[in-house]
Image (cartoon, rainbow, N blue to C red):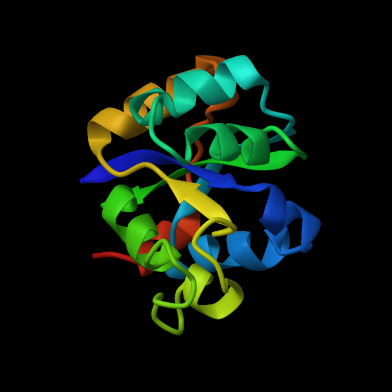
Length: 150
């Protein structure tokens, strides 16, 4: 099933100049970037995005981190995109993440874990609506798609 999911390249990924290398991982897998924007997340937007974590001990630090510098927000589309992206990201803690995953190859921390990815179809819908207008997510044919899945 074709899905669209939200991926955020967090401030540490932007600061470390890993954006191109991380986007390449999704494209190399056969996924399609259908929306992208470099932005500074406001405290209000961070609060809405991480509402489920409000009141937890790490919440204030997470909001401070996510609003500290620009992020690259992506809408990624493809077959089973949510699960595929989650597997590409790897475990949250870079030390525990498998080699070959984004966090496994580039991360050494649980807090500075480079990327966020929606964890379900419900989350993806809600998160995409927070970061993109309908006009900012595009549909376009990739002729290479016929060579990725049968």
